[in-house]
Amino acid sequence: MLASGLLLAALLACLTVMILLSVWRQRKLWGKLPPGPTPLPFIGNYLQLNTEQMYDSLMKIRDRYGPVFTIHLGPRRIVVLCGQEAVKEALVDQAEDFSGRGEQATFDWLFKGYGVAFSTWERARPLRRFAISTLRDFGVGKRGIEERIQEEAGFLIEAFRDTRGAFIDPTFFLSRTVSNVISSIVFGDRFDYEDKEFLSLLRMMLGSFQFTATPTGQLYEMFYSVMKHLPGPQQQAFKELEGLRDFIAKKVERNQRTLDPNSPRDFIDSFLIRMQEEKKDPKSEFHMKNLVLTTLNLFFAGTETVSTTMRYGFLLLMKHPDVEAKVHEEIDRVIGRNRQPKFEDRAKMPYTEAVIHEIQRFTDMIPMGLARRVTRDTKFRDFLLPKGTEVFPMLGSVLKDPKFFSKPREFYPQHFLDEKGQFKKSDAFMPFSVGKRYCLGEGLARMELFLFFTTIMQNFRFRSQQAPQDIDVSPKHVGFATIPRTYTMSFVPR
Image 1 (cartoon, rainbow, N blue to C red):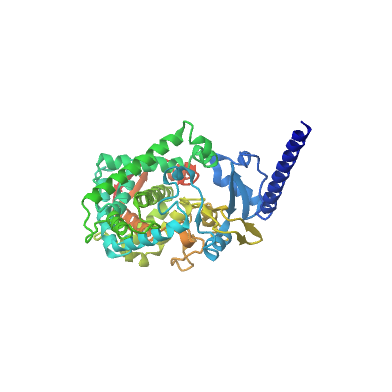
Image 2 (cartoon, rainbow, N blue to C red):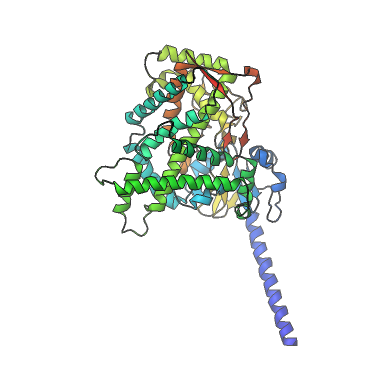
């Protein structure tokens, strides 16, 4: 009896020592991380954060701890980078170290580490290289895609004319148009604007995208291990993501049945051909799961970010009719009203270019950036970030960095104009992120924004039901994404 008691005591003592050693090692490692508020078990720094204003909450913590700090979103430990200097230093100067992908819990529920956007760098690298090359093959960055955008802009102009100046919510007018450009690349065809399945897909994308910006979406980012099993808005977001995945899977099945390896019609065909070429390679990333989810990545990102930016941009121009009038004057002077705008026109249109850049800066579409992860133990400034540490490169803090923008909280196109009125680039303009995991659709998005904005404004004036001073341009939600307020407007022919 005594022997067994001594054995139990010895085992408990060993276990206690092991736990203490583990805690000591962990605290020693934590001591090399950037400073931050002390977390509580499981809930982390939840009590110091406002899920309705997550970005502002993190900026308040930055004010206390500096541009590089550690925060705990529930059990998730995050290193947060604020301002142009810190973000550039990490994502550009130490690009390889910061090339991993952190979590985005809502999307990770579906993607689970597959596809080009939410996967590790090892998986994403060949998929990105293939996607960039294939997008180029189908005209991105060339005259072919410009003509496709111009054609779609023409359909949009007719749709706006058909409203006959009535006040409308422009949301789905814009998302249909923008989505058709990327659809023509990934699916080989556009959708009819009245196609019910198409409208259903757009609602699914908008719904899941908006969920990530809501307070519940931010709460889910912290406590997804529990909340994914509970009822709530997150379950609707899951259904929407599943619906989108199932639609892509059906498109893939159709392409498989009609595939001609010598004549690819779209991105899906090109991926299927690559799958055949590498089917004997057990390490190949070209398989069915990556095909479906990479296609969904392109379809989703190629629809929601540009259309939401444009929707926010219209609101800003109604708030600032003087800016709208100056853009109209430049369009009339450089392009006139008898031909469609061309992408090359932007070189002669510094004010319009500055306005589009300022819309992107002010709207700040992905304010916290897509989370990164360090791929190895990484020395950053005076800190040591252990391999696997998640990192938030706060793109919003770069786009609002007062060192680069004199009026960071205001809509002020002069941020991108020099004293002679010529367009001026800024090192802090990074709405598409930077480094190895910058948005691979950046070139397409830039062309779309210029051609859609100028074509619409060539044909219409914007009218609100409110006086400019009464228009609220503050966002409806700010979380993973920035979501503008719902509004109606009238497109008045010029």
